[in-house]
Image 1 (cartoon, rainbow, N blue to C red):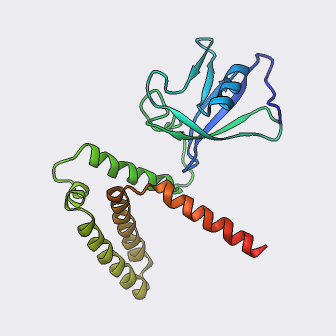
Image 2 (cartoon, helix red, strand yellow):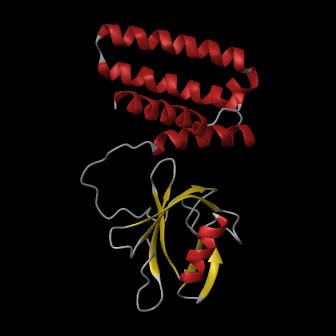
Image 3 (cartoon, rainbow, N blue to C red):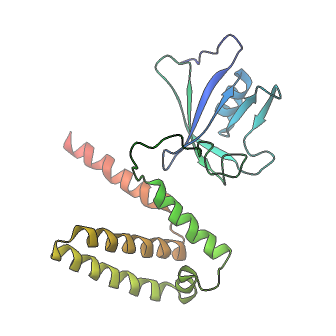
Length: 208
């Protein structure tokens, strides 16, 4: 499909995190930005205030590597799925949409998992005295695996007791220690998701 630019030669772009689907920002593209994004796999936009083309992260280093480009049903709005490096907003916030007007219902999302993974990575890069995460990372894989075994046992006990509130807490502890192990061994969240995606695709094929 060909994108439809408006009378000003622009098309609105919504950019989301490829892994969490978190909406990161909204901007515009002109024809040149559209073409350079498709050619390079990097997110390019058009600044209406500066009236110039710009590549995301060219000054801040907070780049966006495009994983997928989509158009809406009328082809007059672009959706970019990206691998975001650092915050997307110029304020330093992860997303430009950080100002809440009203919350009708608080719904947790997968983004909290990425937050924990990012915190663990930050602790490795910038150790904090007294940090439990740094303690585990300093002890290494053997200690971390021992803790995973303990948390797995506690998860089983909570499940057998039938206490779902306790089970949720134990599962959270188990996930945290798994994330620490992933960091210790250099396995990314994306590596795990890729395996799950492949398994899901194979399962669908078998069911057809």
